Length: 160
Image 1 (cartoon, one colour):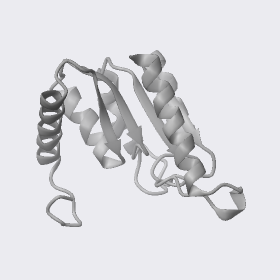
Image 2 (cartoon, one colour):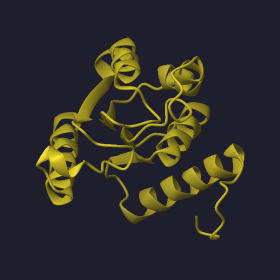
Image 3 (cartoon, helix red, strand yellow):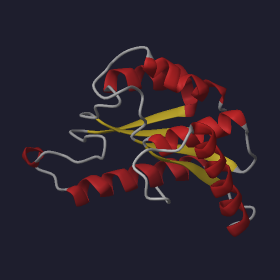
Image 4 (cartoon, helix red, strand yellow):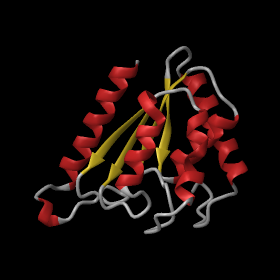
C-alpha cells in the first residue's frame, strides 16, 4: 500500500513490514502492551509474522475481517489460512460481517470454537468484508463503526 501498487508484496516482505511496525510501536510506547492486527490480509500477515517470530509485549491480536477463504468459496483453504493461529498463545478478537464473502460466519464460528478461550468473535449483523451494511438494515455506517469500536474497546479492557 505504501508503494501505491494494487498487488500485495510477497508474504515474507509483508511479515518483515509487520515486524518493523511492531518495533516502531514498541519504541514509541516502551513497556505498554501492544495490540497487533489489521484489516483483512494485514491481520492475517500480522498473525503469520507472530506465529513465525513470537514477540514479548504483544498482548493480543485484532482481526477486522479475517480473510478465511477465497471470495465466496467455502473450502479447505480456510483451514490452511488459519492453521498458524493455533500456534499463537495470545487472545484474539475476530470482527466479522455476516455478509463477508471472505469469511463464512459458520466457518469463523467453528474456527473460534476450536481456538478456545483465546478467541472472541464479534459478528457485525449484515456487514460485508468492509462492514458496510445495506440500507434496509436500518443502521448507518457511523452506528456500525461505533459498534465495532465498542466491541474492540471492551475486549481490550478485558484482556489487559
